[in-house]
Image 1 (tube, rainbow, N blue to C red):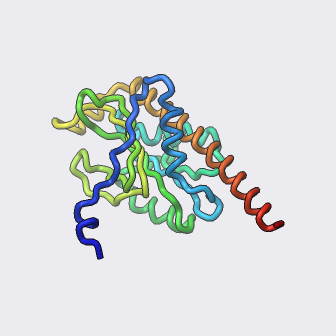
Image 2 (tube, one colour):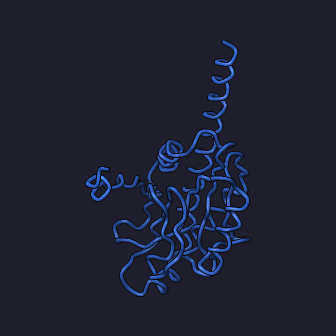
Image 3 (cartoon, helix red, strand yellow):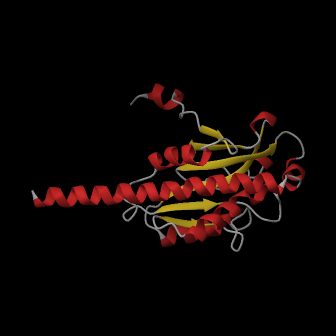
Length: 206
């Protein structure tokens, strides 16, 4: 038993890109697709987009969910949209519902967060579960194997007020970048899955 490794090993630094950078969605999609399982038929890939449209800053998740759902990306299952949001009140119930529908899903959490002034507008892709509500001192269940977060405003003071007074223009632009990256990653996973199946068939015929 390697206690030292367990105690001191840190997760890799999150991948970060500014939403307005040229090629931001493409860069994010490459990183995201590399972290997703290839065989989505045996391990469903589920995006859980957390937030509410009652707060501008907190609407990033359901905006992303809605934009992905409209694209109908074959490998992915999406929960948390403007029509059917997932938020602090119903999160536990929704997680149970998702667990009942999918066997051993690979879950990606998507949420807004607050950060430093210079980081506002950045999108982060990180290993490990999302901890929704942490920025506003709420204890909620952890979500996912990996997670995507968008830094929509500045942390440190009156977080609820800050979220409610975040510019929708920024949130919408970030949501579009994240959704585009997810759509591109979906196409990549589909291609990778098709190639893997073809190789498997060739091996069977040998």
